[in-house]
Length: 357
Image (cartoon, rainbow, N blue to C red; front, side, top):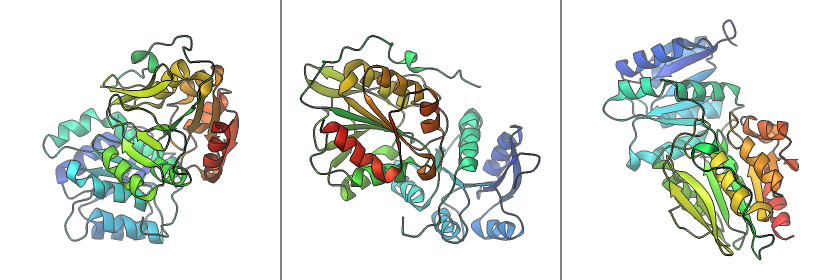
């Protein structure tokens, strides 16, 4: 499958500049290799007939056939890991979310101007997304569906002894997810009743996309789902999703939990970061927290979950069999931070059981 252990990438984009820039970025990483490039899906389809890539980077707006239609065909016939690299602006984020529903594993949002510089500055994220995709197990579509230091949560919130109340009348649920998380969160939230305990979620997702993602979930879930705004109260029957490009922290005033949404440096190469949310929950909710860490590459959330575990929270990790990428849950398990490892379909019931204790 891989040449000399390298991940082989097919780049599909109608811009010759983007194809060349992505090729340069990918070839500069010793773990990656460019299998080929294609200016539209028809050319890509011909290349795939002769050789199957490990990962495809795919634009959305292209001539002859749009990327979403091509993605749907790929995932319906022979699933291949796909990373969307698109210049869709905020108004187009619903289209990108449709790509995630169809099986795309990551979204790299590129600007409509200054694309070359943006891609070069984002090379670490691009290469990480491709590596994460290569590790994934894509499922067949069966329904219309300069290197910065890796910072810890210290960069946003200092570690401190828990100031949580020993016991409150309400618990709080915190959840972290990344690659494959959009579908995992849909399954999890659709299993929640209308009056479920308040939930705060970090899903690694670009700016502007989280609002559309929350609206889509709100339409299908019994709970209310919305993009978190600074000061929002965590209340029964509502799930708050951290906005893209902003950290979201859990805070407490008396017995009231609320969220603080603020900028800050990348933590574990992410903003929002699961570690930031989990550390804040350990500090302000402690044993009153039920936490779940779901599918995703890397280790964001693993250290935060250990802090939650040490503070007396109940912690759950998604199992390997149901993860698209068993990275974040595995790292949390390795740290001894997890009480229970469960398949995705059983996590909601386990959370509800702990919230009822």
